[in-house]
Length: 313
Image (cartoon, rainbow, N blue to C red; front, side, top):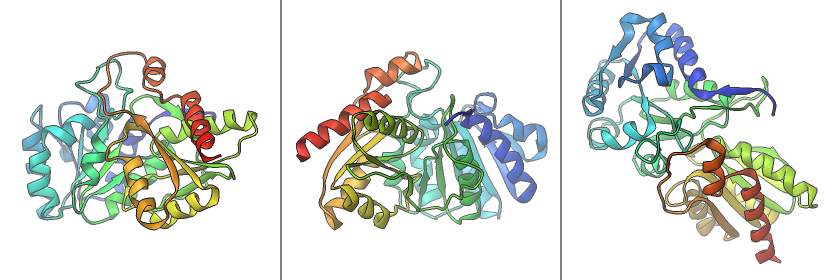
């Protein structure tokens, strides 16, 4: 992990790339193109960029109508607005008829430039997982985001992509190949399995380095797709160590931890712990301060893994 890349920059540049390959692709923006970097698409394809203003409910309805005409609408806004402000329109006009509207949820998680709890989306995965027909993806870095955006563009039906604002480490090389619904082993280990999603997988890898200093071998698995879920990959990861820690920059209710617990509860009962936001909202603060306060830093992930192992023994 060396280079730092902002996923929002990758979002904008990838929209431009996809625009060249998919002439039917349109971008609808909720007055946030400068922040989400969807403005890069506007520069390249001004006639295919629709500025919808601060009217997310209307934007969702327009996107649904365009999808019925054969267009591929990509929506650009903050995750908290795309997931919650227009939820009824998403449910009725997009997911029920299973239309190919793609949601680019920017500024996800806690890192939202000190905007605070009103703009932080820490329940988005829970909401999107519960929507029938919805594909849900949370990439770990810019490399994976670029490939994931292409995959959901090509896939029929609605999709939600969780996008991070600030620069974060690149963990995947040029040889990486993203596949929808596939778990990715990013580090082999034998003592404890740590399952991450989104950028929290980066911190899981950092935690594994810390654990290694104490003689603990962590098996780190990345779940970029929360729906459809790689149940076989989850079971295999649990069987490898007999102890599973999930970690997410998201509430532990209904997100990654719940998804993994559901699978293991039915298919392979395993000692596990859900690590993430403990049924609370965030607040305004610096990135490092927020990660520390809500227990999401690499050091906190490592401590949670040790606690789990202590119970196992």
